[in-house]
Length: 250
Length: 250
DNA sequence: CGTATAGTTGATTTGGCTCAACATCGGTGG
DNA sequence: CCACCGATGTTGAGCCAAATCAACTATACG
Image: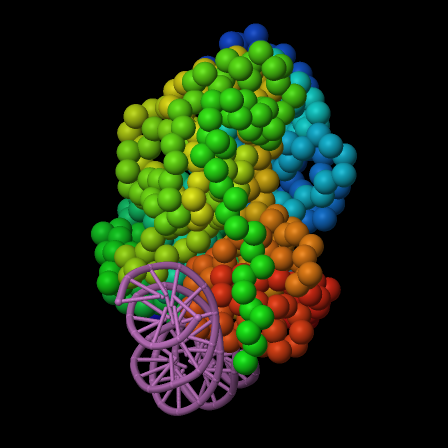
């Protein structure tokens, strides 16, 4: 049908330099949870983090592993997943540069309650949860920033619980596309492009449906001119129409 | 059929004294997020909180109201709800003594993202989010305690998202009963009693189903001897069988 | 080019929703 | 203390959105 359907997604543009100790300072400085901290503190903190690369698809930790580290996305993207024993995965969140995951728990006994997987090639900063707590004790402002971030995530999780409880699959997909666009959208010639690799299965795992149903609904949206989409990418041409889908249902 | 089906739930046993400035000190002292704080700090903090009573069913704040306060359950129970525009409500969480809700946000512009409603007669402590932040700045330990609580809630929310995405209604109800029993269960002559008023509609709103379906599944559980239940109460006689329901589905 | 991965589309089945009628409990007031 | 009535819970019948099963096509990548 169409030949002009090559991915409009930027090439990863990922370079190992993103993880060098030098540029780490810049990354840490811009982290939401070190916002407004004195520079000296950042330098001190930087010394404690360790760095590691992951290839796209590689697992950073598994659900059930002993949980001891806090991780920060320095570059690239990370998926947080939960597995069900029927093999059906649920995609809880997609994290981009500057977001944290892992555990803050210093007590030894806990396990990771989810799996973290590199969504793209990425660079992860790690710190033991114990050391991180020392930082939090020293810099109350950092703790408060964390509280703000956790509160936001909790609100989002509550919203998703509502979606999953009472909205149709069509509405959940519309909502998720808008949410992703708000987070990683960039205006391109194809429209408001969601700037990360996003398959039908990903979308299904984020909305509690199957890839077949996701595919059907995406086809329908494209036919209606609301989105443009290809392999692993989606761009929204008519956000208003998606918004309208959420309101309906009276 | 049976006459002996009066509620085994304790009478609210709620007295206005729970809110007196005197006993508030004790309550604050036992709050998870003031754990390990010096007594002097508790006294100081106590002076800042304001108290209010609510009757069962009364709304503490509505989804969409300007959000400015942090609330603490001093006595009784509180429901956190989200409304959908089709009238279908979703019960996000049930909070008991010592748990907090509301907002920590000091920026003026935000709105409550959920509705808080008195589940029983209850007594609520309130503080402006700005004042609470001052406390957090002064006592880093309190901030860290809050972080722990928020992390736990986020994990629970993620678990619920998984449940809603991939588990059957039967499994969701089994899981929810076990969760409630862990939280407010007490061993009685009827079994492991869930010690709060819990209707079929409540259960439905917590598991993303309808009261009819919840009723059917509860009847089935009772027929199987897994639970005993009546108006607004449930007790679990065979927790193992509920656990087993969660594992299955291979 | 050829192959593996991603996506599409149709046919069929089904879990749970909807609508509906009824049963039961427990608090209230006569 | 009992009769009443609204709130709560139960149960059945029919229907529908979405899952499942299945066959197929299109695309990127080496």
